[in-house]
Length: 227
Image (cartoon, rainbow, N blue to C red; front, top):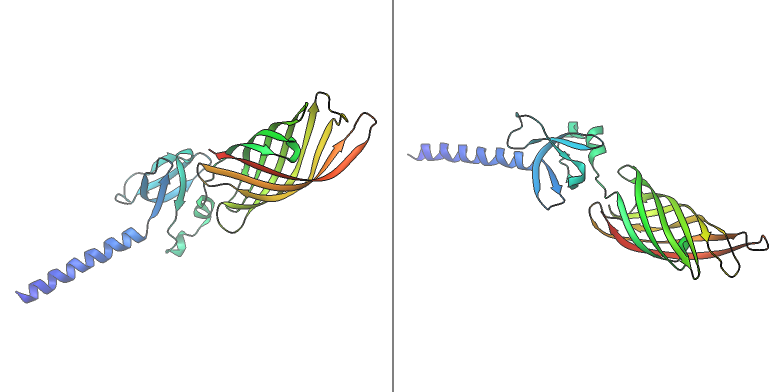
C-alpha cells in the first residue's frame, strides 16, 4: 500500500510541476475591458494580434484587434521566443490624446488633439493640432514631436518643433508663431488614462504691423486623457 501511495504522490507532483511550467510559460494578454487571456502569441500585425489559447496550443490560432488590448506581458523564459515578432509586440500604446493647454504655441489657453503617427517600443512620433487664444486673437497651432521612453513605460522625453497661424487682431498683430525647439516631459499611458505634458520652447513671434519679430522663452502645460 505504501509503495502505491508513493507512486501516486510522484505522479501528483509531476502533474503539478508540468502545470506550473505551462502557467509560467505563457503570454498574458490584458484587454481594455480588464479581461485577461492566457495565450501563446504567434504574430502581431498592424491591426490584429494572433495567438493560441494556452489550454489548446495544438488548436487553431485566434485573433483579436490591437485596439481592444491595453498591453501584453510576455514570457521570455524560452530564449528562442525572444525574436523580432515578440520584441515588436512588446508594446501597445494609446494612439490618441485630447487636452487643454496653458501656454506654448497655443497662447494663453488651447484645446488640442494629439495622434501617434509612428510607433516603436521605446520611441514614437506624434503630431498635434489645436485651437489657441491670445486674448482677442485666435490661432491654429501644430506640433510634431519625438518621444523617447525613460524611467518606465509611461514616461517620455519629448523634443520637436511647433508653429501657429494667428487669426484676428492683436495689439501688436503678430501673425505667425514658431516653437523652436520644444523640449519637455510627457506622461502617456499604454492604455486609456491621464495624459500630461510640460515643455519649454523658444517662442518666436513673427511679423507684427511693422514686420518685426519677437523671441522669448515659453513654458507650457497640457492636461487631458488618452484613448
